[in-house]
Length: 227
Image (tube, rainbow, N blue to C red):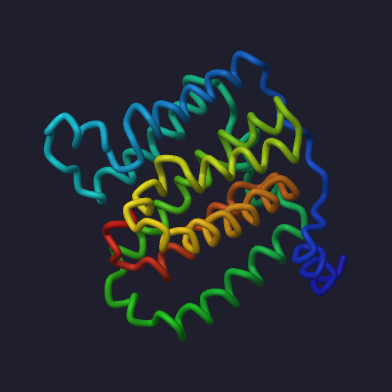
């Protein structure tokens, strides 16, 4: 396969078909419980601890901790392997995945650098925002969407997972803005739907996690209220 063909197939989301999720019902329930622990019991911004009057945890501690906890819950508690979640090693990627991934990474970074070059002055926040985006994809696409698609089918799984991504605890703070928040919710839903379909078609969590993280790193920058 030529590079140009692989790139165009990637843009058309024509990836090689991957086997559907192979975990069983018990593992699926554990995945859903894991998502509930992360998003409800703890909260994406440790809202439960804040409600209890405990000190606010720095995002530089909270975000890596949440990502590590999500990985641990998926593998050690739910007993779902990294490849089953879409975290496959590079050597197992199809040519379409590799070329599409590289082309988007290069092109997007060039565009973002022109638009948001000032973010480079704070690489620590860019790295943190990247991890924050990757964590969101692990939880909402890898764990939640993966199980909902397995349980209810492709269309329902993608849409329900994205509705929870858009209107759940992760972005609930936008409601404080009232009716003016709805364009933001529409944008979040549209972007999330693209990531959901991309993950469904490619089965590759590295791709959607990296794209989301890259967008966060450049666009959010040091917007601490979003992390």
